[in-house]
Image (tube, rainbow, N blue to C red; front, side, top):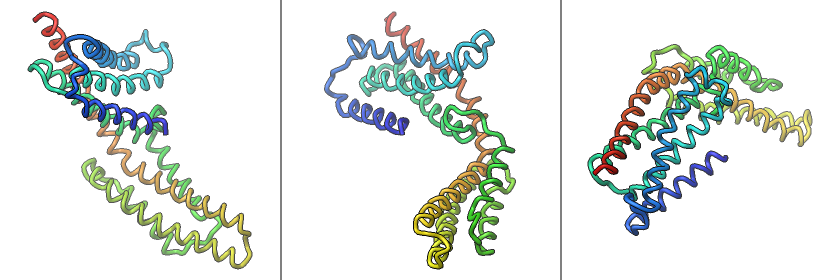
Length: 274
């Protein structure tokens, strides 16, 4: 929830800045606009500290890596925001435009990398998931669906078909293309199985096998277990593809970051020398 509120706050600030860009409150050459550029540029430069913390031996005891990562993410958002206000959401000279475009590309790349990261880790700052762990999770969650209810054989077959189709071993391209279909299938599977689970509970309630309170709690638990199972299958379905995509992204992101630093240095040099 806090990440969502932060996202809304940043979007609101950017929209406000865009709508007031012609009011000339800020100037990139002097005053607050100039200092926003200095601070924003410094934040973008400090993004490299996270990579250094991970790879340099003498920095490995400098606090938990999760703190460095969260700071890296925060600076990766605030830095570009400050720089956009620095340039007043407008284009300028050739060197400043190159630096701006490089920053926007790196920022966009960072958001894509964040998405891939969350698909192969437990949470935004969690440890890396493993294929065997996810398989065990699917197996465990499947066994919990309607544990104390007798599902129809065709429903069990439908669940098995969904799992087989979602987890079929394919290449990375087909795995990626399959993801939206798995999402659609999971939606329909949830609706049909949840409807049967509630129908079975209603039958038990009508026969006074369970009381009203147990019926309500059992219904919520059954739906939650079904959602958990479908979520675990969906996560496992795209895991291999996302691992590969994250690796490709990582090899592309670093050169882009180097280009950003170079264009930023050239921009600062040109501004202060000429």
